[in-house]
Length: 149
Image 1 (cartoon, rainbow, N blue to C red):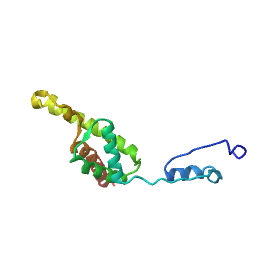
Image 2 (cartoon, rainbow, N blue to C red; image 1 turned 45 degrees about the vertical axis):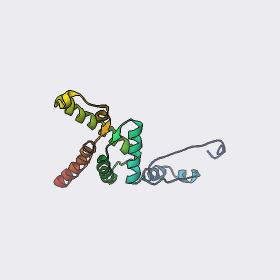
Image 3 (tube, rainbow, N blue to C red; image 1 turned 30 degrees about the vertical axis):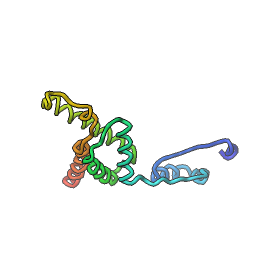
Image 4 (cartoon, one colour; image 1 turned 90 degrees about the vertical axis):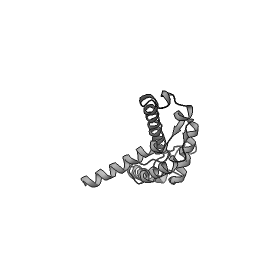
């Protein structure tokens, strides 16, 4: 590395605590890396905006009532292990889209609402309850930990 330092670029990336652990395994490695950049985590509001952009790009509409539920979910999720910023948002959006599909199927195909006919808006809308399921999972998991602790 030293002999070819003008021709060599190595990038390592990860969460600060894990990178610190990584560098602790290789004495002198940290001093050989010229630049260390720490990026702060996104705020809950920024993550809600990221979800909004993801939703738009996927051609879904998050209802106005769903945003506060999603933000509440993100705030609770940030306190749990394995929180991963935008990756957590992507996973939540994937689950919310699935919840939306299940909700729409139940309304129209199973319950026969509107003669079984749904609109494009019905198919594209992520409602508050689609995120509430995620929030309930966190609350229920936390409650079970307190019970068995």
